[in-house]
Length: 90
Image (cartoon, rainbow, N blue to C red; front, side, top):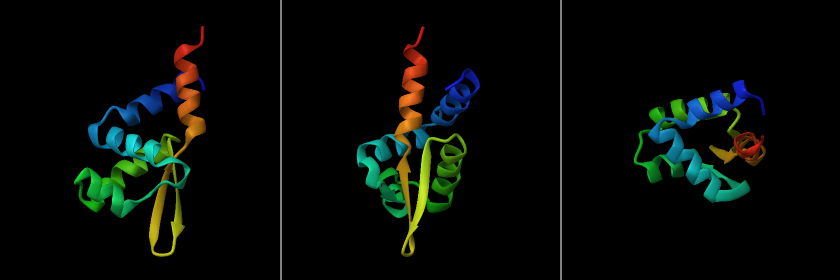
């Protein structure tokens, strides 16, 4: 991860709802969570959450896939690990 990618990732995480969503997705593991579950857990309207999840997705921090009628979001652990590695490298 280069400095520009790190800046984009940190920018995406520098908002309370996005940080909360990302933390929940990390805790959920590779299986991820449905958008409705995230909305309920964060007490955030669906349309507002969709905006924030799109921001995280554009930063490369989350991915999504359709499962039936639900959209499942997952943390991209490779991106998270890249961000951590960027922070600790010399």
